Length: 298
Image 1: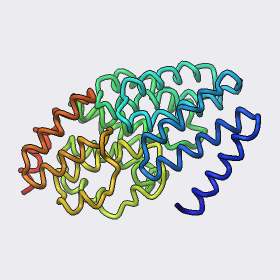
Image 2: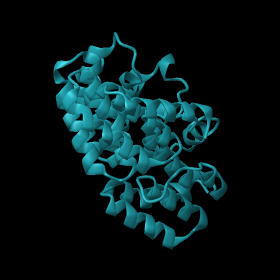
Image 3: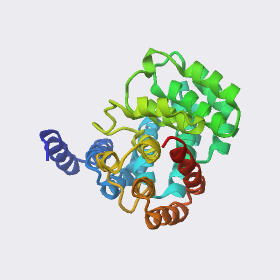
Image 4: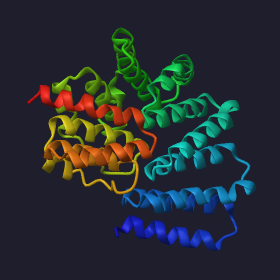
């Protein structure tokens, strides 16, 4: 355990001794974030969910909003897609009367859960509202301005509208999207996979510091990265990801990528079973698409 995590645990223990619900809530978040960084997704989910024990004593809507956006990622990580969708929709309703920045977070969290679910049709249904929220929030720097547009670009590409996809991709470009690893890498990888552009895939996979810290966008970035490695990677490269994939959202992506590199039909079948058990039907259907792409570049 690193020094930073020791400090988190010490501060969390102190907060538990104080009669301050806001402080206790933030302590749960700090603990959950540390657990998430260690790949302890079940523990992170429980820690973040515990924040809602204090919701009756907290009146600040910004704090309650923070509770929602903190719990959604670990909820998906442990495979609770339906619950994550409900949380995102509740958060979207909560922030409806708050600032443009809050409202952008509201619609973005909804589309980000659907990104993880592979529900591109639902993301595209929200195109007009998403663009409006981004436009209203332009004065406030936020990665979700550009990322939301990239996500729309991926949805357009996947649903067959190349012209609109390129327009949205161009609208999202700028110096603020350079770097930041998985924040923008996830939708960019989805675009490259949909376009079957092997050169962009290899460029995005190279030299990225994807997992150095906890990030809202670890899961979609990791899933897209594993799909990309299934096409152009090796078993060594996939295992080097060192992702906590057992019994959660990322497990079928890891199984499929390893199955491809080993030519192991049993692993691929296990991946399909896990995708379907989690309700990730679009992702399950990508096995055949990715296999064809892999064969075309070999």
